[in-house]
Length: 180
Image 1 (cartoon, helix red, strand yellow):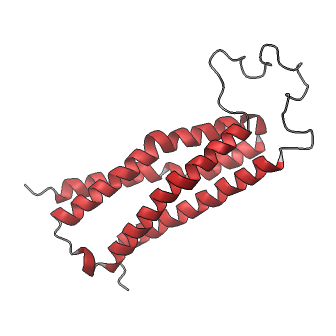
Image 2: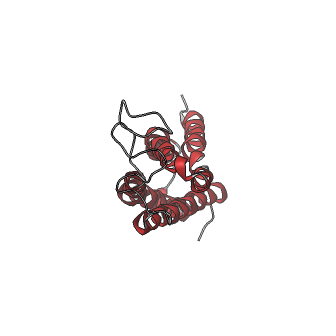
């Protein structure tokens, strides 16, 4: 039985499902920036999508990719395009895990963290919290978000752009099989 067509199907479908949401993260971020009261939620949604969909399926890409090389009898060392794509894939996975994910978690922490079970519903102050309409204790000053939060957001935006460029480069190499 030839497993190559099935592996290719799983590889392509996995790529679509895994990396499709990555192109929606900038939209979620832009909307969150326009509605600061929802920014923390938008960031948590993006992180959760990365944790339960993007990362596991990105790892599956490596498994199906290596399987395609094996079952397709592809000579890895004569396929420059494939070697470059693999290096970019490893860089993307490493950057996403070591830099991007912690940066997103920092934005969540700086923008209020995840709500605790039993917390007051949205729009109402937590029990014993500041009066409605007043700034939260230790919250951002009336002039806007703290500089540390803005720096963390910029880092996440730049990291997201870097990862999207890597994804585009990998897809380009896979589709064109450009030789160098």
